[in-house]
Image 1 (cartoon, protein in one colour):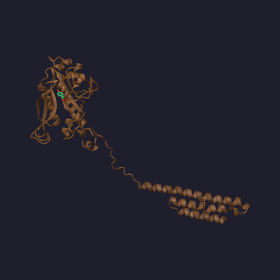
Image 2 (cartoon, protein in one colour):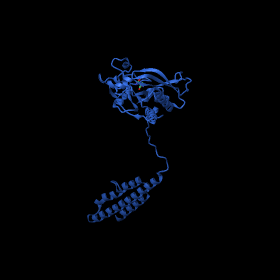
Image 3 (cartoon, protein in one colour):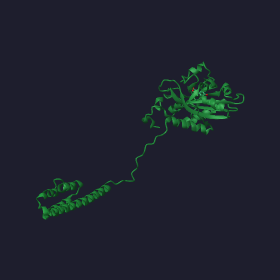
Length: 339
Ligand code: DAH
């Protein structure tokens, strides 16, 4: 029996030594210690051993089992370590490779255009102010010389909250609010969202943005207005840009004008971009109406001023030569990535 056990131990030892992988090692374990393993079958044969020899034989079998188990365990640890070392050598990390760059978002073309306009006016000493998007009819219309039943009111298809409150149709009510505060002189721009009940198309949206401008001081003349907006156009579209003031009508300014700039695409000779005219309309403006000054608590005999209103989307579309306003609102990544 002793020889038999020694033979099993020798064979197991040899087999373990020959195992060069964990699965092979496991096969060895099964073939010796498993249910049908060689050592297990010796145990099963114990019934044939004489009763008085059984404790002795049992102990020998157990010792053999322990030896095999111990050797199996040692070999397993050794193999695992070897595998790990091999992996470490294979998986070299090249710390000099450039890292994967996280994609950072950036400003929307509207925001880029707005910040450009703000930069220009802040440079001329203007303050940037804001007004409410939900506005009283009083500020949106009445104080701007657009009384109830005035036909000019129909020109701006308005979202009414109730009879007295509207979604502002223009940023001009901020003029009235700032004038009412009574701090003079005034030199401000007021950018913000405005709303009109318009159908969506390439040039219209029910929600868009304007930038209002207002200057009130002693001795402000139309010459100041012209000089300011000419400078603005040059800064925005390039030094060679010329401006043209066309007479127009706005209820809250008198006189009023619309301003065109020479087409920055063709320089004024006429192209597809300016529809052959050489000019592109960019804003409305005028001298603040004396009645508006009065309604806002400013003496028109002592103070005068000018105002202007620019469509922000219009500026963004022109600057980036975008031909459809809807692109600015659709949040299509392929479009936005280009700016
Ligand atoms: N609020 C006008 C509009 O939405 C634009 C405008 C015209 C603003 C003349 C002004 C201005 O301040 O003087 O059509």
